[in-house]
Length: 256
Ligand code: MG
Ligand code: MG
Image (cartoon, rainbow, N blue to C red; front, top):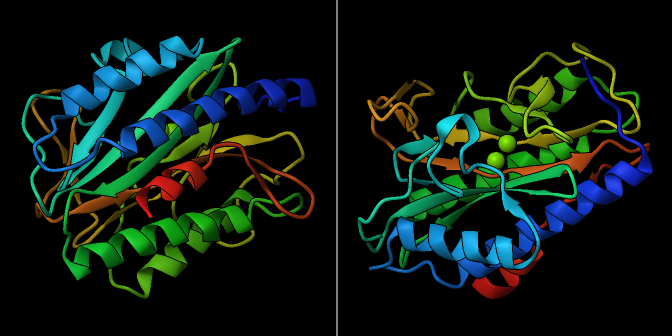
């Protein structure tokens, strides 16, 4: 069942989403060779709690930490650990916040030190594919238009679009209906209406789209062990242009 949100509810999701964006900005300052993902996780948890939020992922289905940190071939749901990040790595950081009863959710893939041009291109295309999807998230379009736009944009580069993992509705729950796949047929799926709040999150692989789960019960990895990128925004469907509730602005002010 899809819960369409009132403007009052959207205001609350916006607040949670802003805290997610600020948490990302804090983390982005720290990402460099030698840092551990467990350290990033601890800083994120403190920052979220200091700002009146609750880390949404901690304890979700038994997930042990506040961030999902997925390095290189790890696609999503990586568990923070005490391994050092290494020059040339990429790391997807996924962060969720619960505040005032509503969730916000956003992911960004960061470079650690100097990353190859091939991988930088993967990140750039994945981020742009998210924008392509957001452009289609307007009243009157259908959900399939969003997935089509993402997949259609990415496929020209020969990358693999992960199909088993999808975006989602978000609000009082972290994961609500509808599922938001990163592929689709134009004109198919539910009609998009005002008040639909969704997290759009393309997961794009340098090589094959095939993925597998590690024995830790969480981490999703590419089968061919090539790198994967992940970008996510929480957005509201609007009449002429979707409103993006999370933000990469603060992250990118720091990175540039
Ligand atoms: Mg997320
Ligand atoms: Mg999500």
